[in-house]
Image (cartoon, rainbow, N blue to C red; front, top):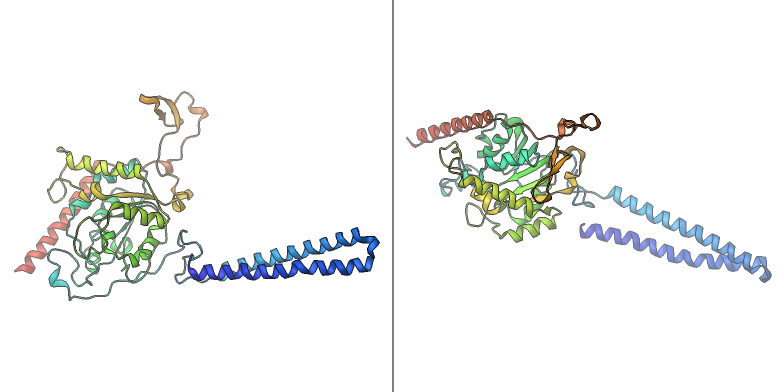
Length: 398
């Protein structure tokens, strides 16, 4: 809550207290008058009358204070329509207008291999295909084990990771500040899947809530004074998957240890989940060490270093508690037996000997179905875009 809001509320309660204090004296005066009217011999009746008046006036005082609080709540203004300053941890309502980047070519010569031509210095910094931030193995587990159906990709660059989720049946939205990246997006439907927004210009959040935010190689690019602007977007997701750089790079202005980020994000109201964090890092490590794994579209081995080194997972209870996200962390619920260490083994309800007595799980609660053909389609799609980019670069170099 802002200092202004605190001051306003303090003033409301303060004035109410003064009124109540003055009204506390009034019943005594009324009591004396009543006592004189009834006479000393009717003292008990006079006292009861005064207590009745006092209770009535105190009730009015409480109603007046409650009305003042309600009035403040309803009239408190927000600098950003849809965001409630009296409930800063709440879910922003509606969709905030996006603020595209302002073009500036003065830093082009210094970018070297980083993308962002024509962008201001604080934007860009992406590469054509950053294999260290891509992990199909983790993404599949997010879908199958965590039940993710929708992803908001924050700082999505050209949409490499966003396109993977899209081509595997996930509802996606990609938000990116670099005009250069947006214009060269690999997404099939950029008009409906990409939002160009510069978080240094103000906050933005999507209309819908999402199961997950995926933000890799993004946090270090945005100064802390602009955190509110993108945290507002993350408040629309149930789970946050975020990485943070541990070294320098193009406009790396927030480089910190994990404990700093964890403390910051918990101050923002998110709950750090170490179990999920370690699980995701382990999956990314498995992928990088699997000699039998398929190669990436650029013909190199998968190596999601940003994920296995610094990925952190947070839970946003405000969104996770919504019925629309009840499908997260799917698991069969009908008991079948116990395994090693007494661990419960379940089966799908409605499939055993008591099938007729069991309520089947709504199919909407189940994970999305993945198929190897989806991997092939995505790989071919990205290879086509990489070849196109290389062709353009070759022609420009001539």
